[in-house]
Amino acid sequence: MGIVRKLEGKVAMVTGGGRGLGRAYVLRLAQLGAHVAINDISLQAHKEYDEELTAPTVADEVEALGVKALPLEADATDADQVAGMFEQIEDTFGRLDILVNNAGGVLRGGDRSWASTAPIDDFDFIMDVNLRDTLLCCQGAAAIMKRQRSGRIVNIGSQAGMHAHIGGSGAPYAIAKAAVIQYTRVLAAELGAYNINVNCMAPAWILSSRAIAQGRNSDETRTGLESQIALGRLGMPEDVAKVLEFLVTDLSDYVTGQCLSVCGGYVLF
Image 1: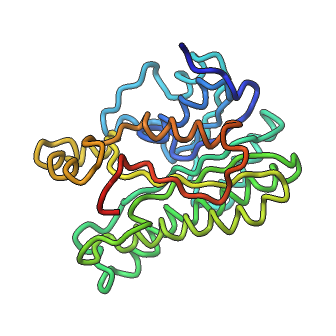
Image 2: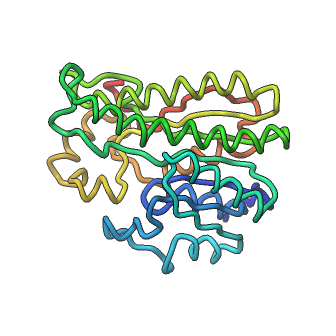
Image 3: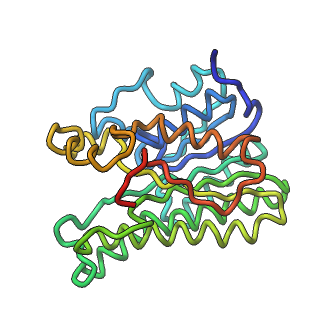
């Protein structure tokens, strides 16, 4: 049985939708019948990690599913560019029903990401690409959704924002994602009066194209990680996209202000 098109006629926006988890979210929303605005700082992002598409661009993949795509190449940490994106969405579709704040990641730090010594510039950068873009896009979407008195916002956190690594590494990213989770709760408390649901997903060890390129799929790494996961396997982007489907359809009408772990039972959490 195919996917039921529960989002027929709805309009969604996904940040960081050019590859990886973001692309999985885009395609799932399109399969559900939504028109999708696809934001990325580079709409050719899939090429960076040799991610294979089924069409020349993600937008083409969306339109092959019988819905409309709106490519939006922009920096989601820039307030003016974000405002421009939401203007384009309203001009094109006249509404916005779903926002997925996916852009971000561990894009700086590595061996210098200790809680007591990480350079403040690293904290600033990681907060910008994981929290600032979420704040800006939530505010842009909320303005539209409040007028509609309806909408769904799904922010993307991480297991890193819910527990600490032994030793205190990865501090800037963990703190930024913890802030995303708390912002989700506060925003949900405000927007519930407008019939807007705001939730968060916290993935763990997912085999995105970037993670694979960085070595997560090596035998040694997989063995170490899988021993900590109750289901005994690393996740795929589609595993998280299925949970997104729950959060943006009527199945979650009475769910807001929550952060759902999508981790296969990551037992260190």
